[in-house]
Each structure stands twice: as structure tokens, then as C-alpha cells.
Amino acid sequence: MGYYLTVDQKGTKIYVEDIGSGMPILFLHGWPVNHKMFEYQFNELPKHGIRCIAIDLRGFGKSSRPFKGYTYNSLADDVRAVIHALQLSALTLVGFSMGGAIALRYMSRHLGFGVNKLILAGAAVPSFIKRDDFPYGLSKGEVDSIIQATYQDRPAMLADFGQKFFNSKISSSFRDWFQLLGLEASGHGTIKTAKSLRDEDLREDLSQIFVKAYILHGKKDQICPFPLAEAMHKGIEGSTLIPFEKSGHGLFYDEQKKFTETLKDIVYSAAKRD
Image (cartoon, rainbow, N blue to C red; front, top):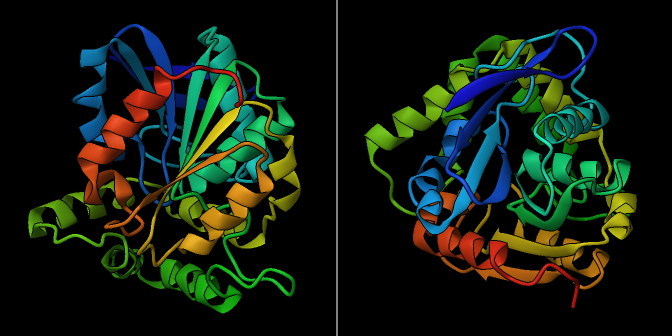
């Protein structure tokens, strides 16, 4: 079922999709789509006693679209409000791409409240862009070009961005559907979160993870290249790196069965760090 939760004193409403019962897993979607990207996981995981919860981040999908509040801190605070309102505990938190960055900031900023396992999938962590002392990721200029294209022709930007998303052959119908998820977002939310992707640096957050962490990442990822996964693995003590050999950025669909089965196995694995 779907419902809304108010997450701040300004009345910002976050849309929540909540299906099944049992062990809870909370999904944070990537840029620039919404919770619907996890449709194929929601089709399967509730069969196995897993309560699947996903939110639309502010500015995306069905959630409120305020003009401000798109820093990682603000977005992590929204997640904290949802977890508190639903009284979730022993939670598996899954963050994909930008959602992975928000999940990591949530864990460091809110001391992992309610979470006992963290899954970073194709995560834009620890830095989405290359820096003087970090040679991985996209260049600042590439992200600036994406932002400028969003101001000028957002549908065309989404189409171009989508061309790099998947490694497997996808149908034109699937590609159209995935583009529509991006079009459901607000333009200003798309732009402002792209600026957060460009400007935020999460390297110091890596050491603040005190639950078991799993890093799922496509070896052929053109958006968040695989060296980001290796940097996460090095920076998060006791983490487990699970490469997806045939996947690009969209590992949730490129290797759909493996991705879904891996989530199920992690949910049912022991909670404590090895």
C-alpha cells in the first residue's frame, strides 16, 4: 500500500510504498528516478517474509517538491523521520546510486538509528566526481554538463543519461518506462540533487559505519565506476564486496535474479559484523 508521512515542520510529505510483512528492508532510489525502480524486487521479496518499504525522496516521484532541502544532510533527515515514524528496527537499509550516498550519510549523521545491515548498490560513494586526491568517478565538467542539459532540455538529458545506465540489452519499452520515472521528478529537485552529487564528499563518513555493510556493484558501471566500490570496501571496516560481473550501473535489472537473491540472503544473514 502507499501512504504519505510528514517529515518536517514545513509540511514536507514523503511518499512511502509499503508491501508485505516480516523482516523490514528500506529502499532509497537513485538519481533521477523514484521508488518504482525497485518494482522487480517488490514482486519477489514479500514472498519470502520480507516487508519491502521504499520512499520517493523529496522532489521525486509522488513526494513533496519544496525548492530547498536537497543536501545529503536534509535528505538523510527525511529518512530518519520515516524510520522513526514507522518505528522500524533491525532494518536492512538499501541505497542505490545517489540513494547509497544518502544511506551512508544517514548512517554517519544519525548513528545508524534502526539499521542493522547496510547495502550500498552501485552507490555514488565516497565521491561521485574526481577530486585532486581522488582519481575515480565522473569529472566535475561532466556533471556540470548534465546540470546544464537539465536546465535546457530535461527529457533529452534523461535519454542520454539512460543510454549509459544498463549493460544488458533492454527493450525499447523498458527504456521508455525508465525514462518516464525520471520525468516524474521535479526539474528543480533533479538539478539540486545533481549539484549535491557533484559537491558532496563522503570519504569521512566511511569510517562511521558500525553495522555489517555489503557493497553490490557492476563491474561495467559507466556512471559510478567499479573503483568506487573498491574505495568503499577499503574505507568501511569489515564490509563485503559483491561484484556483479555482467552489470552496468543498473545492476538491479542487468542481473535481476542475482540482485534480488542477494538482497534476500543478506536480510536473513546474521546481523553482527564479522
